[in-house]
Image (cartoon, rainbow, N blue to C red; front, top):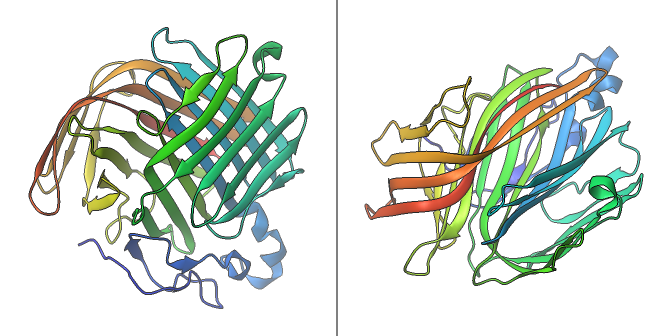
Length: 346
């Protein structure tokens, strides 16, 4: 049973416990991380090192995928940008690990300013009720080729998002806010390639905004896509498993023309020894049946003292069908997206 929450309120009580567990169509909770209380009082001053916060943006255009992230892991900042050319398969990524998160600033709520400036890079994300704006200026990106982005993401008038609050291993928890299929407008300049103009008729953006307290060793699967149906409607997927207690609130959903159609539990069927083989996605209610055929494996690894991260983010095409809340069967054919496996010590 997926528990939908509609009333607003603080995320945590004064003892640092979750007020409620469930999912919602908008971010209704106040993110009062200052009330976190999972360590006993003598160790409370060390709690900030277990807090994990990030803003991850991704853009799907017909020619290219682009992503930028600013994260604070408690004792270190993590900033990374990558871009993939769909035609050639060229993938380039740069990442910075910043001790104690110097220069990293993230907003308390889902609206506000997120920024990093330092070590030759400047990333700034601004969000208000009308739009989200992404600015990236990294002259030294990929051996001095440089990358620069100025992008505006526009939601529909009543654009829903996928939000969950779930417990993880006792007093730990995860608060996640994800938006798919935001109309993208702006430009992307990478190296000496022609400037890529992003237009809302063909390009869509999405956000993964996460806040919470995670175990040191973590694992998760995530799959996502934002695109268009043949009739012009936008269609998105957000699927996930492997982290926390999702019995009351999984993050699984179909996003159709800005509306969330909630799914219960979804199975990721893939070969962890060969990520380039086809993946299969099914759910426990018979509403989802998708095949995913990969064409590019973005394999990224970070090893820095106590931080270790290994991710296989596989890009490919989704085909199959998924049923809406009203019973309409949506056929997907070649929808470009990604699926990933992530293992972390953080």
